[in-house]
Image (cartoon, rainbow, N blue to C red; front, side, top):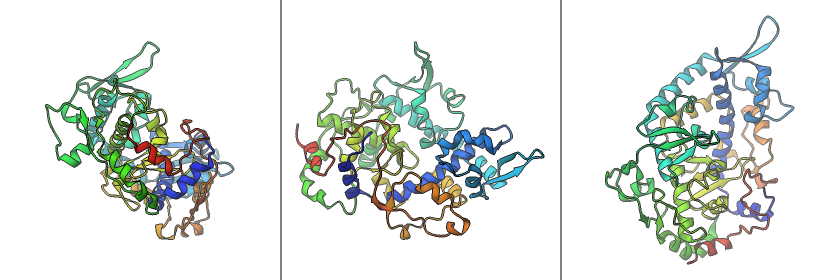
Length: 408
């Protein structure tokens, strides 16, 4: 965990306003989607409101706000009623239930693609297997169903299987290697090759698409170093990385390629940073992974909004809009349109990273809902990392970019 003011200064210089808006929008959507999933798990899709108190942390609803007030903010999705004993219950509206059925249909249609992404994650791992718990973190991000761990993992025995270690930890293990899936998304985009049954992953020399923050003008000062990094060769994410030497620029560029590949798999080309850092050992990536994300701000954008940071693939966005939207993203936008969100990009001026800003937004009066979502982008409180990746004395100013691109 770090409270370094230099990290905060760095973020202020490289902040992308449009992507902060995306972060804020999906933070609100995630609360609603979590509640819908919770209700979906119930036998009759209803639950006593008092029972929802145990999920206050997951919904990220701080006290003293009442869960019932949060639910009332989305009358098109949720409804409240009292039984004859005076117990308050929560359920979904008919429209919300229809949306749940629609989501299930979309997930089923996209199941084979999701299975491909899971297989490719296994192919990138050094032991060709990953803990099931860690893959579960990606469930929503790549469109896996709720029964992922119970049923879904057994539907593709030709690709992977569940095994247990000595300590009873469950792993998902690769069954067969698919050469055509060992081609990175970047390779496909640059070379146009989508399938090759005889493909063998090895050294690559590909430049990553760059999109720097609009106000990040010092990038021109280091253009030569960035160009040098872009031309540097690196080992494919799908090649055996056991011989890689940590700390070299080739090692770091391979890590950048892995993160680029994982983000390319996701529906929104965005992940919670924790979900990336959990795979450091299995995918042979640097310990200080967050630091690498921050340095390569032309490839990735890290939003420091709230306690759990998000990382974006910058090339996938035009302003605050995802360039290519899959059916599940369009479905989420439909849910969001019914959740009472009233933010308008053109009226957002500044940003304050106080922990309860987004919750206060949700729990304002109905008349306030029609007003702009006021977000402040001036200063932040203490930043919370679940992984202690940046020491307090880390200098994350732009000058550090120079050293990372130098020849070893």
